[in-house]
Length: 394
Image (cartoon, rainbow, N blue to C red):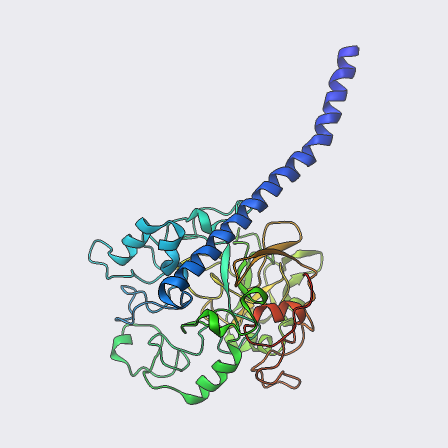
């Protein structure tokens, strides 16, 4: 009898201790994740010291744009590799074998370096691993608080100011499935210069001096949860099979919230039969699946919707849309400030009016070019030159 009492007491104690052990493990994982970000911040600053610019996000060669070239679609991570203690991997990309051209093939294709899981790019709280992903990343480059032409920076795959479907006049792009031109479109350039307000400007070289709000006041990178294929709103995203059906998103970032979140399970999307022929992306193009690819679904993150919100794109993964920051940590995610500081931001951060159109929208009430972010403190932290006042802690 006494033995049974002792066993019962031990069982109760184990039950009481187990949550504490689990909490301690998550605290350790969260600290490890924060340390990864510190390493990325150091790599970012060392890169700038070496080249007098931050790594270009959306870069590569402009050789023939078949999948045998990188198609000017590389994220900022490949260039940072030598500063992340990944010199050997960098050498494989710079001087690949088997007749592959320098800087590798398209980052959405299978290539040994692109498929490599880099420990510094993985948060230990994220259990995602293996196919159909090809080199996951839990960290992305902050591109700001606007939508129009932010996904491409306003430039096509030959570096000209234009849409990416503007007329096939460049023979180097003849093998591609999209259309390009060498001619600069001044109206595209004018819009892109007002909407690309983030620390990183896709396909454009920028420097620390361009961050006039101050490095300590501007988010350089943010955390994201990678897809597990379970339809969770913080790790999967909705895309529209018909781009036109998703265009209301461009003038109202909260538009997807009203359509696609399951009211019975608010942390998940609705099941099959989503409105507007939309689908939840669950293949090799899913969220955070390719660290070498610059597209928004993989390595570009926005300060529009608060952490762990829905992510939504107007068409395919190449289209405009929002990739919200988030994580597998409880209640928020990490961010890396421009000065290298790492902060944890909660889901409840003040994020302004989510129905407000972003800068660059033609909808009524849209902010003027250069105006403060309509998305409150969260949006202000994402702009490099919005002149917002960051008052106190967040």
